[in-house]
Amino acid sequence: MINCLTLSIKIHIMPGMNKLDTAKRVQILNMLMEGSSMNSIARAADVSPNTVSKLLLEAGKACEAFHDTELRNVASKRVQCDEIWSFIHAKQKNVETAKAAPEEAGDCWTWTALDADSKLIISFLCGGRDAGYAHEFMQDVASRLANRVQLTTDGHKAYLDAVEGAFGSDVDYAQLVKMYGPAVTAPGRYSPAECTGAIKVPVEGRPHKAYISTSYVERQNLNFRMGMRRFTRLTNAFSKKLEPHYAMVCLFTVHHNFVRMHKSLKCSPAMKAGLSKTLWSMEDIVALIDKVAEAPKRPRVYKVRNSN
Image (cartoon, rainbow, N blue to C red; front, side):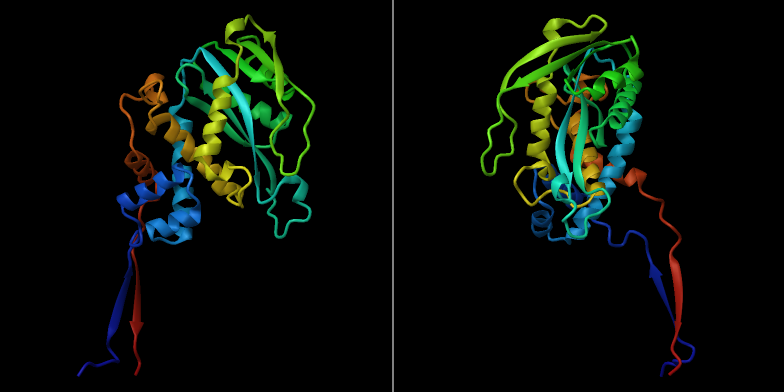
């Protein structure tokens, strides 16, 4: 007969006991990159939606740290910059009447700097579309370049002071100012009016007129909308909070630069830019997650005594 007065039970809570294996995490991350929704991924992978969300945040944190460290001294010749619109929780016009809207609710713009030759995403930033964000974005772009470049943006006025503050005279800068026809109003219309032409406006240095273009970065904006469900228009897949939205942009950027093979380049943008010698796989991103994960703590031991 067991003496219950002296019986002690040790419960070891081991860190990482509920950690998904590599294959399952690769499956989830691949589905995220193919534009699947969080709930559809949870059903297909047979996991909780919270598990998908947690993995996305972990991947975003790892990819942000990797991008910030590795994309330095980029030897680029032509850089194109643009912004793409999305929103958090509700569109800006609906924030006042939205229920339980977080502080960051409303329009969210993703600023992107793309190398025109290698199609490498050099820098990105999520936030507003004002002069403050333009200045922060351009400062980051300038800090990652190794040499003088030809820079092209659209006609957004916030770029003028931002580029001057970040590069000074050490840049060949031009704006591509687009002209649009009369706006067409119709129920459910969400696209801008038809572009009727564009004017190439040199701003600083001696930009080559033939290379004043934002075509590549605008095509990259389409990749954003096709590859990230949160950017898809006219759906309910928009981001409800800013943190997972930003994490998805971080994951997409590293995946685009290192994992996905560019069809015309026949290699990844990072390989074309000389930042990687091999084509990555999603397992390499999972390895990044494990690398930045917190070191396992000492297992806690609880002693339970029965006094029956």
